[in-house]
Length: 115
Ligand code: HEC
Image 1 (cartoon, protein in one colour):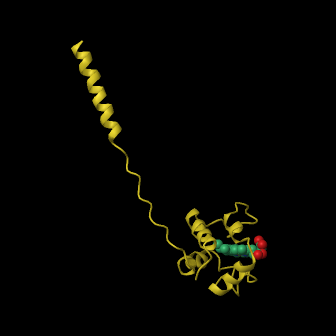
Image 2 (cartoon, protein in one colour):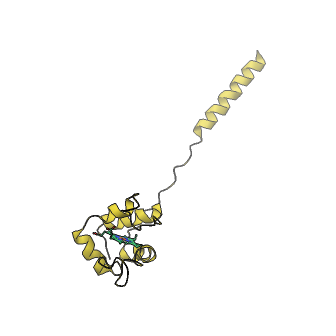
Image 3 (cartoon, helix red, strand yellow):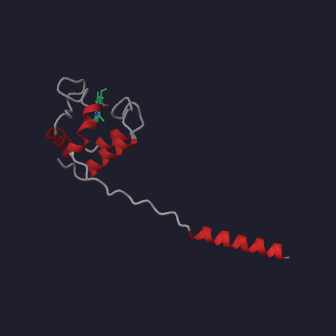
């Protein structure tokens, strides 16, 4: 009986002490405001091969802030294009954009594509 009590008590102590240990919620890093300057290199690496004056998709020049902004001001397929999984619609066609890069571009566009 004593042994039984001893175990029961031990269990209670172990359980109650476990309960108190709360896993601290990680502090979320404050979101950075994306700007053209901060996302520019994503476009340079993934888009301007084609989207520049000498590229195969020169009708949409993505090499300067002004031309990207001019496009975004009147078109709304940019986010659709980079988020799409359809190999005939997505941009870049290779599908090489990482989730993080997509999210950063989307954040930038949605926050008003600041320079
Ligand atoms: C391999 C060449 C190539 C690359 C790299 C590329 N594009 Fe394109 N893009 C094209 C071509 C060709 C079209 C036109 C055909 C079409 O609509 O799919 C196009 C069309 C688009 C359109 C639609 C334009 C419109 O309004 O009709 C957008 C937006 C776009 N691209 C954005 C991007 C972005 C952003 C990147 C980089 C993340 C990128 N593209 C990378 C070739 C490319």
